[in-house]
Image 1: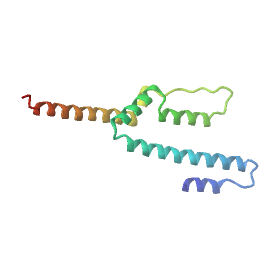
Image 2 (image 1 turned 90 degrees about the vertical axis):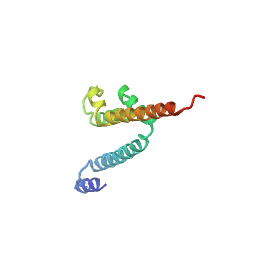
Image 3 (image 1 turned 180 degrees about the horizontal axis):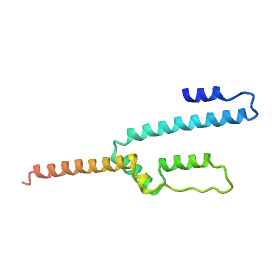
Length: 126
């Protein structure tokens, strides 16, 4: 918000495209706030194995939140006659967010398998 306020004050109010630039700044600020909210909610729900799997699967298939942010950024920067969009590579998908989802799934798998194994060993067959 402080950065947006600073940028708003730097826009000369006498320019003919002042309203257009002000609206673009307002939209960008709202989008950045929404992205932060999405990241926080993803980090909270990531403690569930189902959520971690969903985030990882959607990112790998190119339908996740990271791909949506990338597409929106490309659309906002679009200024030519032909729009071209390059999907994220596997390396980008399995970056910090994808790798953490994968590691959370592995951790839950080990934890649940160990719990089931210990329960099986302690079970009295009689």
